[in-house]
Length: 341
Image (cartoon, rainbow, N blue to C red; front, top):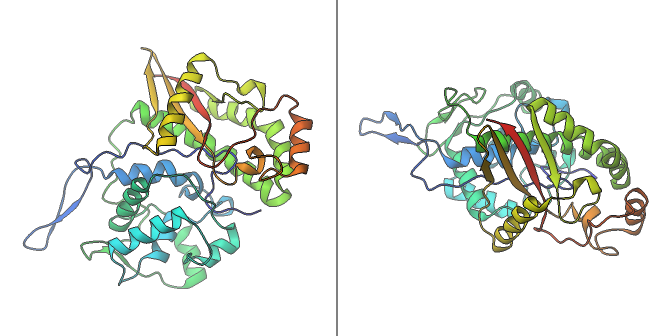
């Protein structure tokens, strides 16, 4: 089953802190129609990178994409007549209930499948859409040639000041290459890239061979892939839970406490921020793993979302399995990451 932009079985939505607009880069228009750059960063930029780039990552090779890049989404949803309010409204409506009828990207649905519902607070989607409307979006190196081959010359997109949005590689107004990433950013990057690697491989199995084949894949490859990403990042990376499928993913006492904290936040619909613990020379980073509709194919209620054949395979591979009975938008586990400062 093909999927568009899904966190599905891994389902690790990662919403960053949506700070008030006092800290974002805006473009102000002076009386003489010149533009002045205010040196602040729009919160939607980081939210887009942390949430959307799991599947829409512009640095992914064309043949490895599991969803269209965000610049393509912007191009399909914004025309000369589109207002910012209309664009934000369309993005919120799509995120709340993805459907073929609402989509303006039938080619993407045909190639990748329909995006399942994802849990994101509405304010998060609004911030991302606000940023997308006003700013150049980083695009893959292959995108320009791909677009010309499929559609011919590219149209120019305009932001809120009526200025033409460039066709560059994303080195736009909000790029700042001189600052060092915070421990929050480092932890989130480790979680995101590990999630993306797991997701890419797992999604490929689902698309080619179905859910049961994906279970075989997880049984053999999920831990080694996680360990390999830990080696890449020179960190200690785990996915842990109070209801493990694999006993090796069982949370310890401290992790269980953080897990309960995240459960309360997600249940309340609050924006979720990572928990960061400074240990002096090291940092511990924790972030929730939240279910969506695709997770329930393997983690839902037996006889309902969880089919009999799938359940039988789970019981064969994991005789002590506890990771079923979930609904949508529930915390199934957390990222537990430790790295040197």
